[in-house]
Length: 379
Ligand SMILES: Cc1cc2nc3c(=O)[nH]c(=O)nc-3n(C[C@H](O)[C@H](O)[C@H](O)COP(=O)(O)OP(=O)(O)OC[C@H]3O[C@@H](n4cnc5c(N)ncnc54)[C@H](O)[C@@H]3O)c2cc1C
Image: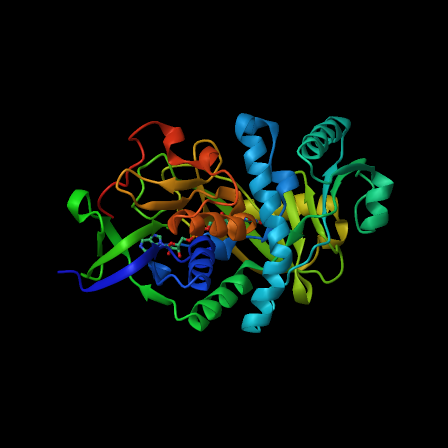
């Protein structure tokens, strides 16, 4: 006998699970979130919080470039109302800023790559322009004289993901949505597909199950959602740069109170752990950031950390259903914070039997082959 029965159970309480729960709760659906807490690492709290579709869509995505860009652009636009509404509801300031991104080039070849990126974004309907090194320095006087050109994406924005999570938790409480602390070890199949077993010994049941469990849940088959480790640091450097700067080898994100996030490495491999942060990785990121803005070079380190992004084979998220009828909200890779409001809106519509506001077919799990996407059993 299941120890608890839910209408809708979302497994995973990162930004994707919590924004979806908030959306469903706002539509009077009865929903609970099951989250493992510290037992399974969370990508969301490791994120820099850039909302930057202009830099996160590239020609390498092939046929997925267009739907991915539109997902990101739609969500970026949604953040404009989402952020103040969340702040007003919860009293938590999430440090939303819409002051654009500068992508830097030191050499002509890098400038040519950025110009191709700007052309792609403009073709897809976005705002992106190439500017000279001097024009970039006029926007950000701390930039080095090495900068010869920059891609300016004036509509990009950013938030502080940790504050977003605090606000979302309060918002769920306001809506009587429970976050149940439990680690799901296995999902039922066939007649028992509505059940799932937890490490704490409980078996839960839900009419509707949503998997939003990030990179290392043990609930998705190896190879379809996999961890991509990122190491990052924060330094104290009030006012050196005022907007997000993406330099070769590092990005620089100024946050409230003079905190500046510098990220991030990308590492793939079977032996990834989310704890370790190497001196070499942080030194490399800091050197690359200081090359872009020398005023950052001697700033005091405040913190360093690592996180595991939920990657997928084609770099695009998985939004749809598996063969057991469970809903999948997975694999947002480098852009889960950006995608969250639009992904939540679309997944909520799918779950409630409505027509999603944009076509989810490009993100359907069936693109990986018929029958391939079914959650594995065991932790
Ligand atoms: C260094 C770094 C920088 C990044 N920067 C950005 C950025 O600037 N902009 C951006 O948009 N994105 C960024 N990202 C990516 C972003 O963090 C992710 O795409 C996003 O957080 C994924 O959210 P999620 O909810 O899918 O997964 P997660 O945040 O990982 O949440 C999954 C949750 O599920 C829980 N869970 C897992 N398994 C189980 C289980 N078996 N039972 C119960 N609960 C379980 C976990 O405990 C966790 O709370 C960055 C990521 C990293 C690592």
